[in-house]
Structures are given as structure tokens and as C-alpha cells.
Image 1 (cartoon, rainbow, N blue to C red):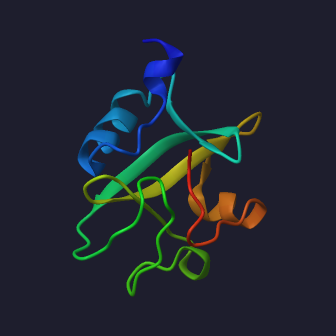
Image 2 (tube, helix red, strand yellow):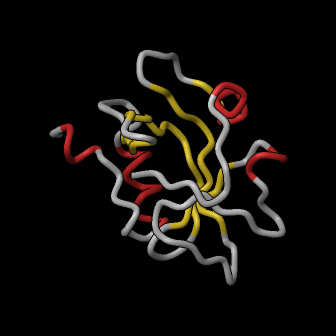
Length: 113
């Protein structure tokens, strides 16, 4: 598997991205970019949110998902929404999304590249 194949394309459906993350969990790990820096995604789940829209890769806020207040991060995909559960910033260890948000806060409307 080439490193470029591990890069997440947020223009895909949430289920396809979830499966890519699961498939690459043992290595090399799926990744996205935030402000140009790589961010590995180790665990995620597909959310069954109806009527939630956003540009692919956009951090969402809905009535049931408020990333900054609840410690949950929901990302828009071409079809559906993906909740990120576990990440690994560059040169850091794997961590739950709640730990990541303490050091690297996210705002609604920000986008993963």
C-alpha cells in the first residue's frame, strides 16, 4: 500500500472512508491533513444523521453533535457523516479525540484537506 493510497478523500461516502480507516488500521494508517499537517485517523464510525449537510471534509455542528462542547468530532463526507474517535498527530502518540481536542481545538466549519 502506497502512502498516497492511505490519504482520505472526503469526497467519498462515509461508509467507504470508514472502511478505509479500518483496513489501514494496522499500517500504514489512513490520514488526512489539518492546516497542512498530517493527522492519522485510527478509529471512526459512520453516523446515521439525517439532514446534515456540509462540504466534504468540513467539521459539522448539528443539534446532536457539537464537537467543541461534547468532545465529539463529526466530519461531512460526500454521502453521510463520519465521527472521528481516535487520531494521531504527527510525532505524537495515538490518542482519543477528546485528548486531541484539548491540545488542538477544532471549530465548526474548519476543514480537513
